[in-house]
Length: 101
Image 1 (cartoon, one colour):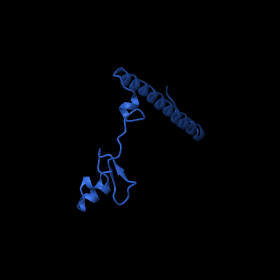
Image 2: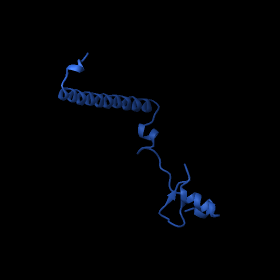
Image 3: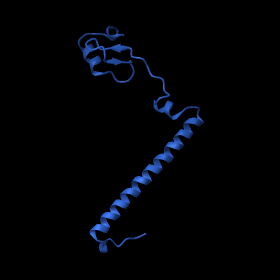
């Protein structure tokens, strides 16, 4: 399919641009849907749901293990990167044991 862009009016070019944008968005949405279906099928083939593999609603959550002594609403499970408040407390001479819940 070929277009003679030189002979199109500005309105026709803008309409074509809009149509192309819509076609690209539709294409990407369709491909994402296909990829998601394939990923779900692969996960189920191995005995998992996709949510379990991606940490979604089927994954087990860890309970908080540590709390910020200065603000107990800030907690950390002890997994992953240390929050800044943990680093600050340790730099001030506290140990992780001091922050156990």
